[in-house]
Length: 149
Image (cartoon, rainbow, N blue to C red; front, side, top):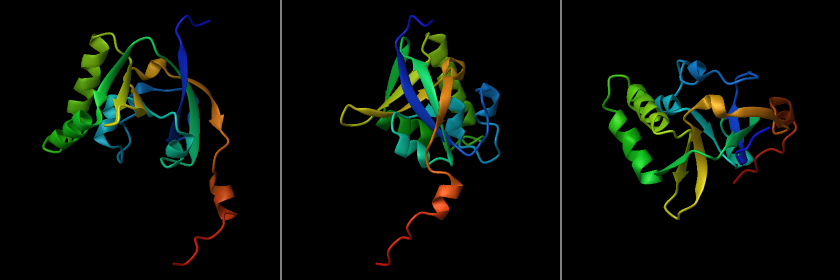
């Protein structure tokens, strides 16, 4: 079906949806401006769980990948704080520039050369393949209490 190698990535959210609508990514009033970059993903299920009660499993093609150093991404975020829209336009423009270069997935490269976060700058390439059976609000009720220190 697909000629391109795919990678499985996860997205933590509290939203209920079964397909990605690029317009919804930064539409929420409480959305961070960097949501305008695209769909944030990680290969780490536990990291994804930190961002919502639902972890969606995606398959994403790896044929058009760009990278950004974590320091450069931090600079983009920092510079965007001065913008009237708190960086929404700056992040959206960065994603648009990557798409115009034929890139659809951005890997955030840590200082040690590894990556643990990715952004589908073209969210339509991310195909939902399931929901991870991760922590749910119901299972949290049965979790052990945090011990007193």
